[in-house]
Length: 125
Image (cartoon, rainbow, N blue to C red):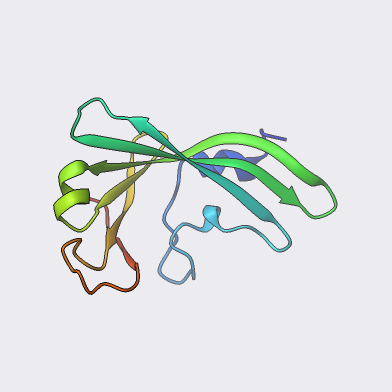
């Protein structure tokens, strides 16, 4: 049921406290649960900005099968300049527009010897 408090708390992402093992606890599936996500690209208002939507598409609950949710959870914004010449910085905000955290590439895009992709989770802003 989409009105379950567990799913509604996903729409206003809250950072966990320092004593919790997860940055955003509501994004972590419970025991036996499986989340299926979609990443949707949405043209930004400016040519310089790309928006991505994180959508929680389906959830598998133990003993209940798959539940279709189709909920928009977060928006990621990235500038073309950061993607082409910088550290691929993505600002992540919840559906109310509140910045939650940022995702940044650990390596500069100009590093020709980069053999792997790794990202850092940064404070918002």
